[in-house]
Length: 378
Image (tube, rainbow, N blue to C red; front, top):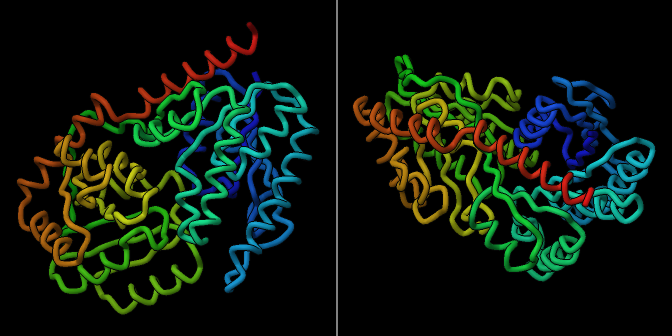
């Protein structure tokens, strides 16, 4: 059975797409990912652990100017057309679209080829677009999604709040497959750093409180923070400058997939504070949450968000108000108590073992595919 996946990034730093594709290959599927080669710095064809990756160049490269968002949407539309044309030259049995910006490709292919279509919604795309566009434009994406999901066979999403959102707009079958990580060990292993080390590796944008973290550690002693990831160039430039001016903060840039878990194991705590006014972030659970759990590390989250609620419920870290002073208190509390670090870390690992691990999510992914295949044949 051949799967055609679509993702609008280069498939270099998207752990969800990678782990799902890898699980499908492991279970006997042939997986091809058509990705977007934004800066044309990645190979146009590549095999990654049995996953065939085809990167289609964006005809219009992103611009970071006042008109950048509209220009970038035009580039996305042209990429969608090229990706659609590329897919028509290939053989496949199931279409799997990651996020709304690829769903339009999947719907067109389904209409032309009559193949089953899975929609994998990592977030609520219209909510995300409020970071870039006025609300009336962002609402257009919500309306588009509501129309397109009528064409899908099955919806996959990442957390229960997003499942509830989709239940309100469609009667299509929905499965929650969280961004959990594979178990690394069944035994708690404390870090051995001489200086308390807090880690953040992930998306870098205004919804994440990473600059607040740098400001906080700047005012603390016997602390260091390590920050990595990718994001908007202007945001990255300012963050790099901020870290250079902060002796105990390091910005390491883009981090390969396979380095994230080892780096998390070596940290004392994981940072994942998010702006609670960002609707998408407030409803979601970041990769950091699950990376911290499988590595047995306490996490610091924002109170009043879904990630904060899970952290409190599972006693897997600390939740604080969204401000620098509250963050400083949380960091200090962990720094000054190895007992607290161990208690929270052990609990985090235990809930990963019993509940939040990729092995359990992989079983649900295979159930979705079995159901879609069965439904398409009967």
